[in-house]
Length: 322
Image 1 (cartoon, one colour):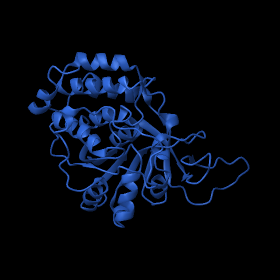
Image 2 (cartoon, one colour; image 1 turned 90 degrees about the vertical axis):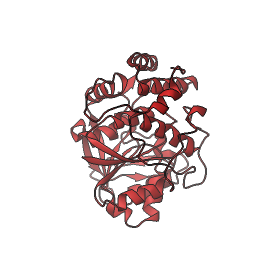
Image 3 (tube, one colour; image 1 turned 30 degrees about the vertical axis):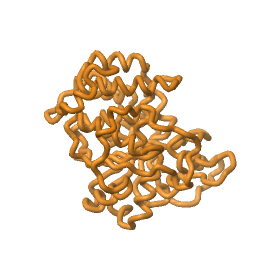
């Protein structure tokens, strides 16, 4: 069974929350920690911990990570739009920050733990630079980040280009799902809310509340399950087909800072350096969305160890917005 740390900017785009919910209900993996990254990481950690408690996973450490990128300033303000005051009492139980939690868990289990990085790569970069042993001991890092078929500043990379550059230079085994393979993972927001309400469990009511909050900030597009691809890879690598590429991150260009670059030769040119990233080039979108529906929206997927057990969390949302 794959042991996984989820590093997430949960509370921003809604797919982080829904992907963590799917991870909690996937017996193929074992969650060993959650770290948060982005503005107000403590509030993001509360969102994550409440979800874990709902799934009987309150023992899993959740640590608030980097509140700023390595450059010291975010490109724009994006507080966690799904946070509500009723989540304040969840907090975090980890005494260390996100990067130190990663370091502690990974170095205590060399070669066993994978990191699923679905936000800015800041915590990962800090773990790499703080601990020389981390890069040797982490099994692999699976990311949602970058764009490998066009010139585009994908959010998770452009949010902290220097951190992504540290990761891509680290020598750690990396698999990347770029923006271009995620766009077919779309579902109507109102249909998602209606399905969660009809499922009517503690978790589905909680998710419905937070999806409503996400919609209320004026996001004018369907839900896109970008972050589900790294999870699918950890569950079963046959979900994707990858190509072994040399990928670099632009950190200085006036118009290109934050873009991922991989040479596509027309005349036999060879990009300097060895390949360093397994880039997803094909995804079984239909199979993945079926898994998402069964495990999160409808909760029809059965597994022996899946029980919703938290009376405290149930009381917090009983008769709530959902």
